[in-house]
Each structure stands twice: as C-alpha cells, then as structure tokens.
Length: 473
Length: 106
Image 1 (cartoon, rainbow over the protein chains, first blue to last red):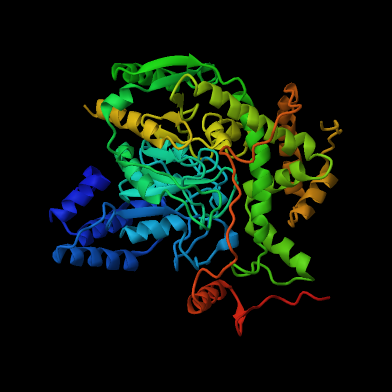
Image 2: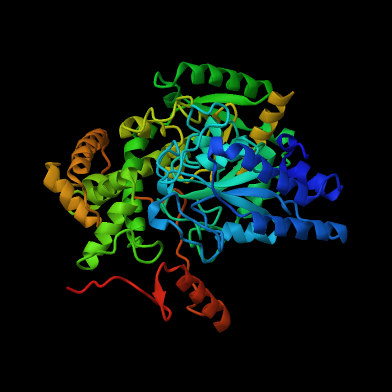
C-alpha cells in the first residue's frame, strides 16, 4: 500500500518517475480509502472510478515507454461539484441540477487534463456555494475529518475534508467570500484564493460574478503553488481573466526575497470578537513570522468593518441574477409538471428545487435591486466597496502582505448555527474583504490568512512556504 | 445621493419579492424570511454612517478593461454540431432535438 498521508504533488511525481509505485496503485489506494471512510466523512457527491483508472493506466504506459511526464500527470484530484467536468454529474449540491451531466469541461479542468491530471470525483458543498458549513447541501452532510462532530467549514467543505482525510492528493474549490480559505482553516489544510482574474471562471457555476474565484486546496503551500500555476492564465471565455506571468517562485521561493517582505497587522482584525483560542494562536503565528527575520508593522483598514454589509448586498444581487437561468426545464427532471402556464412551471420547480438559504438570498437580492431601494443599498454598497479597496491600496504603500486570522471562531458542531443567518454571516468577516477587493489570499494551518497585492500570489505563497518549513522542523 | 425611503418589510412585500424571483413561499417560509430580512436590513443601516458622495464605483476589485474580438466561429462546423448535441443530451426531456416541456398554454 502506498503511504497516502505522506504524498504531496511533488513526492507523488517523483515516486512515479522513479518507479516506486504505479499510478494505478495510487488511484486504487485512494478509492479504497474512500470506500472505507467516506461513509463517515461525506466528502464526495459522486465518483468517476472508470475514467480515473483509465487515465492512470495511460500514465503508467507513458512511464513504461520512457516518455516525459508533466508535474501534475496522473495526480489524483477532487473537484468541487460546482465546477464542470465533461460527462460527469455536476449538481452544485442543489436539487435544481439533480442528474445533470456537464456538457463541457471548465477552463481549469481543460488545463489540468492537458497535463494529465486525474479526477477522482466531485465534492460536496453548500448549495450553489452559499454557506460556510457545507450543511446547506441538498444531498448530504460533510463532517470534519479531525473531529466528526464538527463542521468542515464551507462552502468547499467536501474538497477540504477530502484533502485532510487523504481521500485525494489535492483538490479544487471556489471562493466568493471565503469558501476556500475558511474550510481550509477548519480542516487544517492549505487553501488559496487567487487574484480575481488570475484564473478563468468559465465552467464554474456562477454565484457572485464579481467575486468568484477558483483555487486549490492542498496539504502543503508548495502544492498550492504548483496547482495554482497550472490553472492560472487568460481565457477568451472569461473576459475578466488576465494574461499573467507567474514563475517558479510560486512554489520554489527564495528565502532572501521572502525576508524582504513587510507584514502588516491590521488593528481592526484584533478585536474582542475574536475567539480567545484564535487570539493566542495568532500571537504564536506573529512570533514565528518574526523568527524568520521578517518585519511586521501595525496598519489600519478603517472601512473593513463595513465589509459584511457590503458583501451581503452585492453577493445576493449577483446571485439572484445568476440563478435566474434555472427555469426548471433544461437541466434537471421536472420536480412538478402539473402546471397551469409557463410562470407556474418556473415557480413550482424553483420553489421545490432551491433550499432555504438560496431562497433567503434570492429574496434579499431582489430587494436590494428593486426600484426605489437600488441607490440606498446596491449603489451604496458598491461605493463602500471602493472605500475598502482604497484602504488596502494605502496599506500596500507600507507593507507587502497583510496577516489576519482566517476565521474569528474555531470549527463548531454540526447544526449549531444553521438557524441564525446573521451569526453565520459574521463568521465571514476576515475573508470577505479580499473578495470585495479582488486580492489574492491564502489560509495556512493552524488557520491564519495572508493577503497579498493583486497578482502577487508569489509573496503570500513564498512567506507561507517558509512558515510551513518552520513549523515542520 | 439616494433619497431615504421608508422600508416596509411585511408579508405582502415578501410575497411580491418572491414573485419577482419566480418562487412561491409557504406561509411559514414567508414568516421566517420576513424576520430574517428585517434583521439583515437593520444591520445594513450601518452603511448610512458613511458619506459616499462623489465616490467612484469599481465594478470589481481589479481594474476592468473592455475585451473586444471579431464575431467569428472559433470551432469547426462538426465540433459545433457535437457541442449542440452535448447540450441537447443534457435536457432532461427531449424530442427530435428539441427540449420537451409541459403544456404551458391555458
């Protein structure tokens, strides 16, 4: 049996080309682990064994022939179920997409496929990525592998849990307000939200189009850099995507360069609303960063306290527009076809298909966009978003990277917060600002976040890389 | 600058919003949403502390640029036919290449 917990993307690649194991053995080991443990954890919504094993055999054949393999060749990955993988079920964990099979590959999947990556299956999420516990999935509950009475975080809870429980080598998630970073923190793995525009959104089921990003969840910072580099780049199918020039420093940073970084500590993220356990964790993190010879500096981001209001106006507005395409006719079998007219058909099927949190956000989105309230809410929020962006721009005149906790609270038991939406929304306070401003941000165990300048993923990955080596020694 | 509007969230306002988003709500659902929406909108009032006169709106966090291209087919006709077939195959119910829907004329 291949020792799965020890594998990283780099070690897997080396083991493969040095013929320590075959791709098929590793893929079979993952499926064995999934069969054994996923009943309890609930990370996956669907598996694609046949295609995965076929790709593994292809890679093994190429090795036998002595062909060169890409770094991600045969790497067994898990994909969040709001990212399209051709001919496989894609549900966004919603009843409105039950039984739907994707008719094309998302841009990120095309890129990974061209490098030979293997897709083990699709992972659970909050319905349409709306939530921070993975409890709003219409299909199943996902549990935190480190303590199954706790939530894994969300919305990419399935991907985070799969990485943490060694049910895949690495995974993709999506992040609109923290959906990669918060579950990464809860499951003690690494999660990177790239700069808005660094990775194509084509083939990602849209939530908030001005906020959504696809990014990696991995065991190590090095792996996050490797996976990010392979999915980044401009794409004609996403006109917000940019041509970017990323180098090997994403996963092979130079210590001299990292030591020149100045880390900003925002006063606004050190308040009494932070759980004492997280506060003492952060004291330790700051000490460790200083021990690398890196300078820190106190900064102020005066408008970030308005980020929750700003986000919970803009995101539902975009969501309510994006989800209007689900008319109950094209993607899933009709849940009710006893209808009087077309409007009745839409209403019946959407009412049966969408869960409670989606309905709440649809109504909220319709409200903030409705005539008479648009200026007071949507336009106001967009202006406050500019003020938050200006705060960050000023801070980056003095510092290179900003340090915060990823979540103000540690993982909590399943079922604890589902009834109070505001309490749950507050938990996103640390992660939302990076989405509103489009900045890259990474969550690193034990649960701290580094936010970088636009397209400077190399700064946060570089600092994370040396931090990780420090804590492993 | 936006004119201050009296916000009235009651059951009929919730029902109106539901119909705008093409969903129907059960009585109990509407009650819960009325309570939630009141609490959420109440919280949003904090934004009124800020003077935003003359602030320019940024559409996303990153500078936006217009992207232009010629309107030309990017794939061959046979690829195009295969793509259309894949989309049609995803329809839950279809007949002769068309999507099949329930009778919707009264």
